[in-house]
Amino acid sequence: METTLENKVSDSGSRAGSPAIQVENIHHFYGKRAALNGVSFTVNTGEIFALLGPNGSGKTTLFRILSTLMLPASGRALLGGFDAAIHPDEVRRRIGVVFQAQSADIKLTAAENLWHQGHLYGLRGAELKKRIAEMLGRVALADRANERVETFSGGMQRRVELAKGLMHRPSVLLLDEPTTGLDPGARRDLWQYLHELRSQERVSIIVTTHLMEEAERCDRLAILSAGKVVALGTPAELRSEIGGDVIVLETENADSLGVRLEQRFGGNATVLDGKVRMERREGHRFVTDIVEAFPGEIQSISVSKPTLEDVFIDRTGHRFWTEETQEEEKQKK
Ligand code: ADP
Image 1 (cartoon, rainbow, N blue to C red):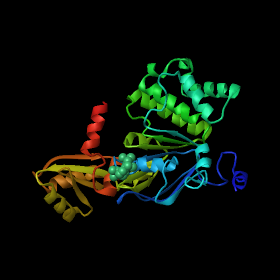
Image 2: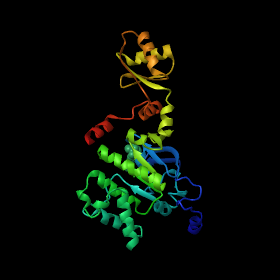
Image 3: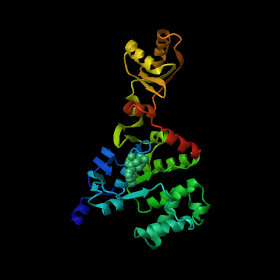
Image 4: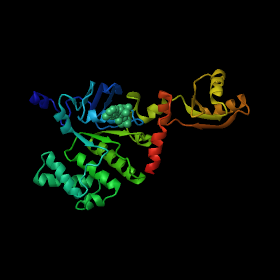
């Protein structure tokens, strides 16, 4: 059985013609609570794909299923054409996983950490040495190879994790919130390495994130909300699905103004955080019409190009950021 499988495997490590990752109608429950509710998407070879969602949307659950740590209640996750539930060993050989929690031993040097990791994958001797040097070079840590990881900055420690995940040359890299706790400079660096990996080695990369600006850096993304994919596409495609500009109005009585705006101009007005929100083509022209139609009622008005957060609001009717996630972000700063 295994030999037959191997025979069909192409040079890139995938079964011929298979996308890097195929997620088919996955459901998962904790007790009665549904964490994933029919999730499907495909990631192509050499693509950086983001799973963007607020806390509790199901990212970690999906990540654990993709990394073969958990079986879904129903549906399938295929990596390189191999079902993670049926052929977990085949899948593990092809994936590199970087978890949020630190896995490097900080008392060891960067090179020693990679040496242990390489050993786990059966690398030995000269080949292992060569691979360690190559991976440390890839994440720009060659000159720090023999220093203990505990002396490294947060960004450098994360790069050690990345190098560990790459030691066995996986064709798919899974990264769970890879830039959590990193300063903006270290975030930028890490993204640069990911882009290089994608373009120079055609590694397919899945990144879970709750940060809009990270999802913007990916080739495509799925936005998750309450265990469902509410949007799927390139960042530009998703933004362009919003009908034009986003207009936000502050007024004394948002609910009442929302209803009257719809009556007068058509379209859809939603009230969020006590403000009225509308999507409109050529929003700046619409501003004068609104102010003239409701004299003295508008306290402030803003027109902006849609962001991924607007896509989320458009699809779910509520904000991406909860007070809880905002608080977390503040604490990180
Ligand atoms: P995210 O990673 O996007 O924050 P999770 O996959 O961790 O989302 O969680 C999805 C849902 O499943 C949430 O409602 C969460 O409370 C619930 N959940 C996650 N892990 C467990 C668990 N071990 N036991 C019970 N419920 C869980």
